[in-house]
Image (cartoon, rainbow, N blue to C red; front, top):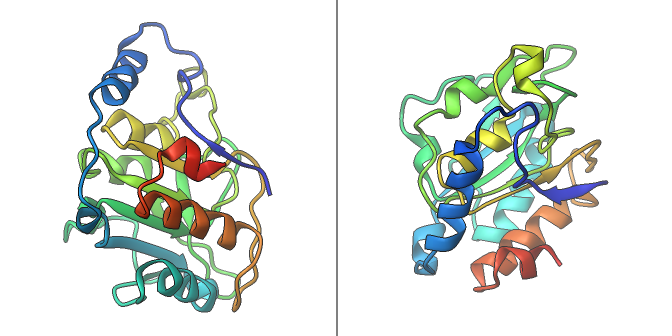
Length: 199
């Protein structure tokens, strides 16, 4: 599993507004109380519900509120994306502004860049164990929406932790990407900086 913090300049950018926004977020960050991060947005492909429920219970003490795709997604009109902590365990693909759920051989769209626009709360922290969930691709040249990771950061998320290539975890237990994402969030919740949490 390759896991990286995503905070780079978007490929193909022709002007600096995105980078300047990232710098403003970093320079203006102030620690918030842990209580603000205990409400979570949890999203999982239906086939990985056992693993994701265990991950959420390990981090938050409960998996109540876990959304499964299908039937959840791709839109979240109830404000679920406003939670300050996000844990997402879905499918992703190279150069795709979408994450996918799974039920049998069906892979419905679970979350898109468009769905996140205007929905991510400033200071949010996301741990995303989707394949290519933090891949940076040239959305300008490809004429598609920017990566989901960039949408989070553009809206003032202070951390988006995800895989730039393949991510793997078992369906009903925890291992690999599950554990890496859990420990990242546990360290953030214990007060570590996102850099220290990643280490």
